[in-house]
Image (cartoon, rainbow, N blue to C red; front, side):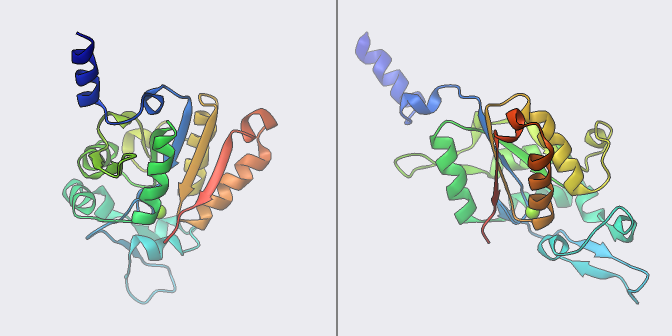
Amino acid sequence: MRNLIRQVLKEYTDQPLNELAKTNRLIVLDVDDTLLKPSGVYIYRKLPTDPQEITLTPYEYGLEQVTPETKKYYDYRDFIDPVKTQKSIEQAEPIVTNLAVMDDYLKMGHQIAILTARSNEQIVFDGLKKWLMYKDRKGNLIPIGDRLTRENVFAVNDVNRMETLESETDYEKKAEIMEKLLHGYDEIVFIDDDMKNIKQMRMLKRDLPNILAKKLFIMHAKE
Ligand SMILES: [Mg+2]
């Protein structure tokens, strides 16, 4: 009997039991240019100074100085398109250095959350559920499975999600969600490639009461 239990446990998990222990720590990851290089989705810019529409990759868009005043000159049509959204994740190139950081935190028992400027929250969740893998202690690649839950996926430009948010810019929306999350966790590690998001999180950390601020760790994603 004991052997059977041991065998069943072994089948269900290759992880040491301390990895499975429920912890109240969270790693919050951006998607584009953090977890993956998206394929086939662009942002289109037509500022009053642009003679014609300019096509930007998500990475190039991350370098733009988008403000509440200039946001209207950007067109996010590829990110609204459900088929393009799905393909952009399923056919994406993984960013191994940041995935390795994610693996390390998962090994320490952190839960995982996604905080992205995308729309189509449900499709982003479905796509990541299929695409995202992590490495266990033995180095085996394992589908993310139950370690990614629907309620921990936040796409701040999703139509329904936006209704719950007061902020206007993507970086403010991300900080608004982070502030709410900090009330529910003992530690949150935030990883994002975009300096605007990093700066906004640093401002949030600076402005929050110490009891919340000390839980937040901010990390710039590697390229
Ligand atoms: Mg990004």
